[in-house]
Length: 374
Image (cartoon, rainbow, N blue to C red; front, side):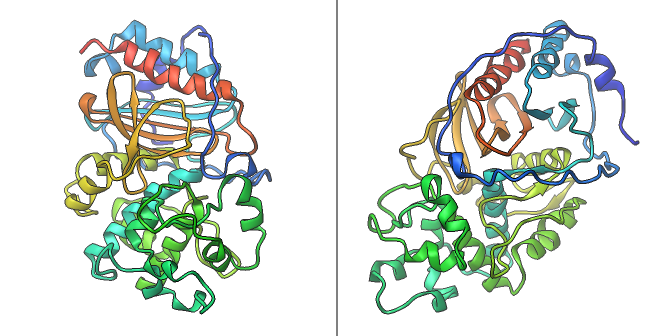
């Protein structure tokens, strides 16, 4: 194993700390998510590329930082925790039988990956602009009986969850994923508002976006991601589930190693550049993590400040963040003011107890931030 043991040997000597409770709703599919147990993939050797350092060399109190691991060790659903500061990995550990090199199901954090793919497709000329419509790319799923407003749904509307379509998430999720044609099912739902006028969280919107990406590029969303995102960053991703027609799920079920998710977080934080290589347009990154729309009807462990293009804008303590967030407790949270990235993955199956989300918020706000000296 290539892993530098310095970080863990420095941190795994610790006593336990309490956990709390809170509730979360509105994540990718709420309590209607697929409860089947994913087969655990065999761990693979991790290629370590992120520089490593000690927390105390990056502005943390060494003794206070020890409490981070002891708190995390008591979280029964936690799988991984990685903390990066100033592009340096200062903490990495795995919990509850999850191992280094295993892939995590990102659940709705997959939506933020999809955002990057759309930005790359525009930069590479496969898509002209976010003003193009769903009808421009998949006209075959439309029919003459449909509400004519559906032809006005743009890529931007799908990225901001403002298509106007009734949501496929929460109570509608099982019916949607059990249907024979996910694209048609999502588009045939009634319009609840004019496109662009009303936020309504829906994984169906992002699945339609995946279809656009596939039709625009002539590749599956996974194949496009492998060629333009993963391979240039030396990331291996082979699992992204598909619908009955073979389209990768636009907003769900990307499987990525937590370490590789951290690499993506570093790339986004650096304006789309990783190790000197341009991966995504800087303009696209800036626009995507900027405020685009105010979400309604969603509760999470952190205060919501807005929604970008498939990125959550949430506040942890007094610090604004942009975050990829997925059902069950999958987080890639970037705090620009502190130059910190927190990657945290959890058991994704089934209904998640509210206490786990309370523990996530406490872990970030009370323990990671609490250990800062500068």
